[in-house]
Image (tube, rainbow, N blue to C red; front, side, top):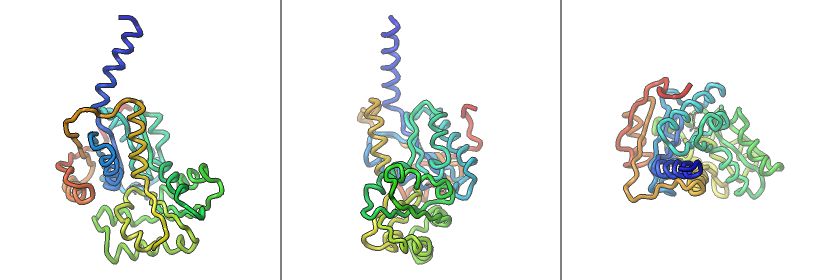
Length: 289
Ligand code: DGL
């Protein structure tokens, strides 16, 4: 075989293996399931490996450099498991370490901040945008930066809402307590006359009902899940890596923390697809140093 033929044969083999390879999605816990749900809706034939780092989550209160280390470690771990693309379904990890994870992996790595920023700029009418997220995300200033790259004149008002992730991880996504907390966080932002709120944490779409109720009519809520799912599709189509046979997809759920709890809440937040949750020990093994 000539060099060119050999290259073509290699490429063919790579394509057929990668067509069937799963998509890797990770978060500090359950929040990334909101992104997984959107990917499943858009790409129902694709198999997904979901990784929830619940033993080390929440990431929000942690140091940016530490979160960056987790992001690189998990992205590589998923790549070593054979995924064809990695989705960092966590704003804190995207803000802290998307670029480093992209540099560390051979497969493409997508984040959630840029899609959310784009959605907000497209939605706002008065160019006054609120961003709510974890402390790490707000501290990193990743959203104001991403928004101003698209509209340098947009006004961005950010607020860290550190307790909201804990409500979600407890499964408390409605009721008076969480509503009072959301009201307390949103009051100063609404006072700034924003017309758009970015849910800058993948846990927050699970509180969408409460947040929408407090924000009131006329305020647009933007989350990046649908936009990220569209980017995943576009990427796989462009590379010719969509899964193309009729067998039902096989999803796997890996968690570093309590698997029974992850299974119970995973079924509530995602659905019956969460049949089994596998425990992954830390530090992650098989990750290239
Ligand atoms: N769901 C995550 C995010 O989008 C992380 C929340 C946390 O672990 O603090 O930021």
